[in-house]
Image 1 (tube, rainbow, N blue to C red):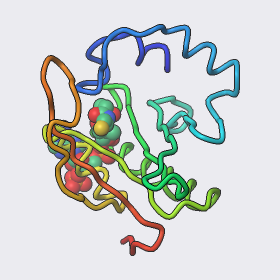
Image 2 (cartoon, rainbow, N blue to C red):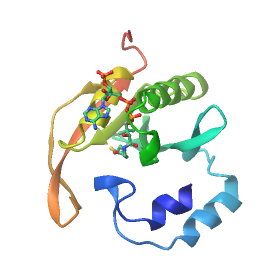
Image 3 (cartoon, rainbow, N blue to C red):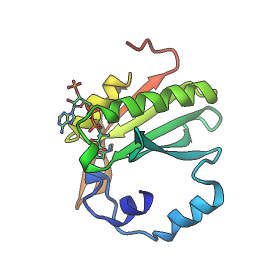
Length: 155
Ligand SMILES: CC(C)(COP(=O)(O)OP(=O)(O)OC[C@H]1O[C@@H](n2cnc3c(N)ncnc32)[C@H](O)[C@@H]1OP(=O)(O)O)[C@@H](O)C(=O)NCCC(=O)NCCS
């Protein structure tokens, strides 16, 4: 799964960042199974089928208060079936339950309506626009930052 997402252009959409050393995936798995204290990944399963993965990594604005930045990628055949928003909600519940962070954030693109809606359904709120945030697919692109705080009411 991880290998495919790092070697197949187009599989992940706008988040494809070009070819990188795919042995990194193998080394990281051998090192800690993608479950370190500063970042991690889990496979998203639907029954017995592996449908994609979720990820998280730490960040901090003040150097002492940690937040998680989360991400997700499903294989194309499993998209649009209600898996993505549920997986992100489950990931956030898991991280709030097992780590003391107050804030979990995620970012997507203006074009990615599926992820925008999924984040909203997982209890995230849009915080604004990060203009010219990153260079993807040949141009500088805006980022849409979302967050969910531990104290946010979630329907
Ligand atoms: C983004 C992604 C995780 C969303 O997961 P998903 O399982 O496809 O989405 P869901 O089926 O859970 O749908 C969640 C909501 O988004 C809507 N949605 C799904 N696909 C959509 C699309 N292509 N366009 C617009 N809305 C869409 C659904 O209708 C649903 O909203 P609703 O309940 O109000 O009807 C998944 O499509 C994916 O992995 N895409 C490629 C990788 C990616 O973009 N990752 C995020 C990078 S920031």
